[in-house]
Image 1: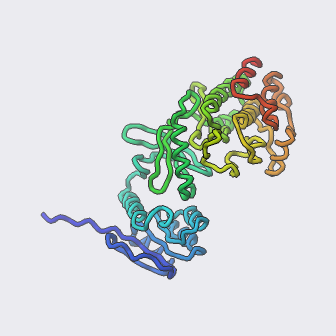
Image 2: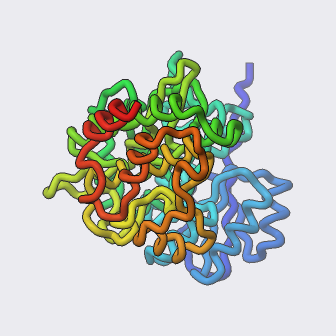
Image 3: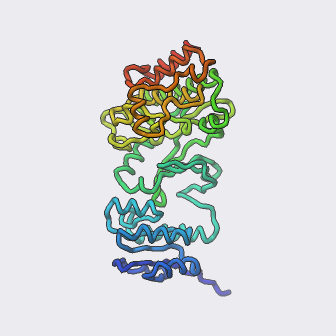
Length: 388
């Protein structure tokens, strides 16, 4: 019986004349200096991976063109200059100088390309990707499977993996997030790095985001809104007591299950408030959503738990009235309205059925100065219970 040799994977090299390393002997190779020919070869010869070596000003263009022709991974060879590397990564390629040697990166790229050829399910590290749950500016969340267990797999955007400093901080704070365990916090299980991507696994919750619920209902019954806000305050109070703030509380990050139990998502991208801790985002970076962010958060001032309580107030305002308290189309007008507490409408103007004590709690939560709000989540719960 004659053993049939498996075909050696093909790697296509495209260069505009930029010097590049010699092709690796373990792979068959084709080299071209013409991008039109490269696109044709991708369609006809189906290489397992493509390597592009080009001047910084054209490499992103070439990456984009090749992505239109193949699902297979693309590796770029560019000067090791961070801004250029980020542009390449955003275009869909992986910079060999950033993520490792050409050989190590190309080995992973070829393995991924072969999986695509075989029609196998997409994988990331030990996880089989089942479906996309949601996508945001910084990450995508998938339903994934490891063995017999299904989890929510959060995968950070590739450009966030460029900085080793960011990787180190992400790993450190994800470890801390995994220690948070509370009925109203989505549990973080594990984290790692695979295929040049940072990932973390979280509890897979069956339910709908509050954002989707509000899209369908417009607003909630006040009693239900207060129940959900109380759960939100309870989860935040636990996290604050452990030394963490969320900084991006909004309906899209809140999941409500069939029993009306609320869970807070995205505590893997939180910020520690301890003085000696280095957050995964620098203090001069804004992370959050303007519509729900507190004035001090937007200004870049030091934040504490009252920052999250402000966002809780905005969410509760929206649940009770069906509208956000500040919704100017222009960002600067929105920020100015928050700073001056210039509410276009009071809670009871938008919903006369909302009891005055509940409206007072909401309006205190969204006052512009932290010292004018409730000092902590326990005080919010107490005020809600008293008003109810």
